[in-house]
Length: 76
Image (cartoon, rainbow, N blue to C red):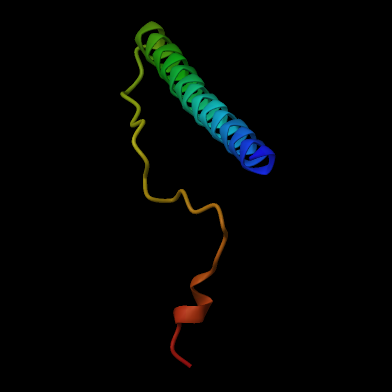
């Protein structure tokens, strides 16, 4: 019984740790979104002040972080 209790306590600790990690990740993502929103608002204010053309904040599809070249796809 003591061993089962120990297992249950470890399991409860792991569950609590997983829940804490999940909450931290949620908050980190929220912080990133707020930071992005602030940056975009700053850009829009700058655009209005300087009477410049609108900026596109959407991804252009060039977001590849891994870095690969198209040489692997060229005919030989």
